[in-house]
Length: 449
Image 1 (cartoon, rainbow, N blue to C red):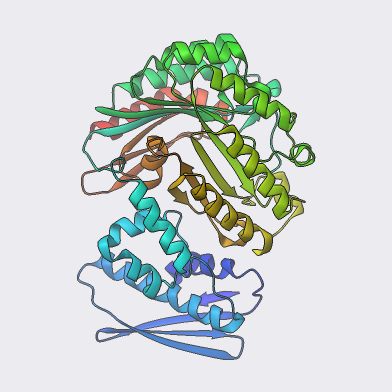
Image 2 (cartoon, helix red, strand yellow):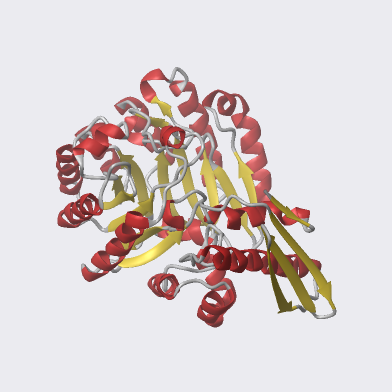
């Protein structure tokens, strides 16, 4: 149980507390300002820890930011002292460490290491990502990416918490696609400088050939990076690939998650590792770049199992490999059976992938973190040189507008000052269909301001 005299920061402090999965104590976090010093006191059971920080803030928003930082940092230091555990990301709990690094500028490494107590290895990883993003990362007025959500899958994976329905049980697909096409048509007019198109989900290729063609026709042929989340090999067909080729798709995501058949069955996938390899070869025969996802920390998988999956993925030679750390979110089947995952083997998996992928010439180029990740680690995308996925950089660094379409899609308008305004769509298909025209009006208003 955590209490603080800064009650508006309770949730932020709980984010730090949740990183220490073994803690089950009463904790009090207090802070006060005296002159140009911020004093923090952390009480854990019968132990008291005191910290002080130089404090200078001109504007209210800066004052609030520093107060929150000092309190979180103090709680982290106290918990680390109390448990004897130092976490790889130190006191950082945010989703986008790279975005924070950009904000800190040339001094970010000193800030990460000495202020936020991030490990040297994670600080070095961020530095490499920023280097890889050179030439891709930019802030330019009018830049935007078009995102399309197709929230249907052949089956629901046990780890998944996305709003996605099994397509065989969905009765509103035709109405959903009709509404989605109206929204897409309105959205295309809102982007001045189109950077990329990304059709995700879900599994967009789970649609019938007729509906998939209708969707692609609505998006149109684009002369930019154009990605379709094929994802599940049991939904990839030659006809779908022909349709993608016709409309100028440049990238296809083929996401094995693992190449161990027993795990695939356990997590609810109706295909084998051989199916993945066969469909990869089919996708490659059409000349598409390929993005692949693997997950470290899947149930009952050892370090050797993960090594094997990564080595198989490398043998296929895709352009992008993203290594996700299993995240136990509310709404996933695995969440019901596993409450927490410890670092242990998962950390070894992540470190192995980092070294192995770089040894094979892949460069880390984007990274994000989530709550309830195994080992308090991260998801990292790796790319061959000159094959960085623009959409992944834009959405993670929040430097361009995201004009998002479909159920549970979140549009973001980024101003020249960096202010971000979000517009979320209804999560379920029935509500989305009933409100899509109002959503279009709100979106036009947002991006026309």
